[in-house]
Figure 1 (cartoon, rainbow, N blue to C red):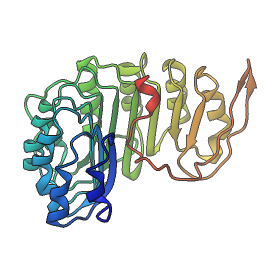
Figure 2: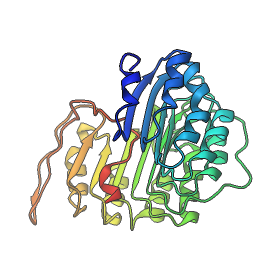
Figure 3: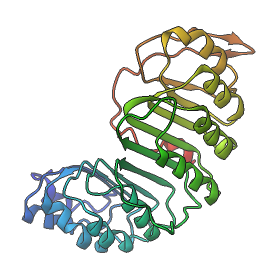
Figure 4: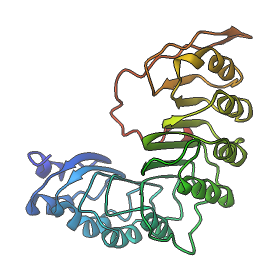
Length: 298
């Protein structure tokens, strides 16, 4: 990035940029000359890049609609408070593995981004209270939560996940994609799964539950009631493969199943023109796991 950064100033049609932000002060200042970007992803970064973000955001005010900040340990809530008000066109905000920005911060910051359609962030074990008033996101289509938390009794779910599902329901947003990931594997409780289904059964197209265990009864509930579901990613224990194949056969629109646990092969089914085989995902995507599927914005 540092080597060709000066030449990017002359690329008139440059709209998307992803880079590792280990830049010097002078190199970081060159970023403010890139004024036509619509989509920025920064993986890791030096303090120099974080420090220039407020100034760069003012330059990007007319164009930037997607901002992804990943594993930026110098990033703080104060910096984001200086950045987000400058970005009225922002519809996608992803702040993941940035240890100084927790869930309380994010629920405060979204007051600056009322038009968000995609939101992803990391939650941590913290005693900090959530904001009393949380601005609604009525256009939200994709939500991803990366939860770094101590193990809790199973079956259960992090309390904050329930809070967020409750919020999305009160916002009446057309949530089409939900991705949840835990740092430690946990069996999800029936009540939590029911809350997801009851809140978004009519709109959910993509569901990914990473490092989460589901009972075959809960998979059946999801597949039977979420009638628009097309893509699902979950852990499938080998002993439950046949029962889960039966459950997935209830999902009439599912065309992609990703196995995110132990490597198994799910038995194929051929009922009423329904055919399903599934294998463990073999290669990592060039996109971050928390990014929204492109199809939900069509």
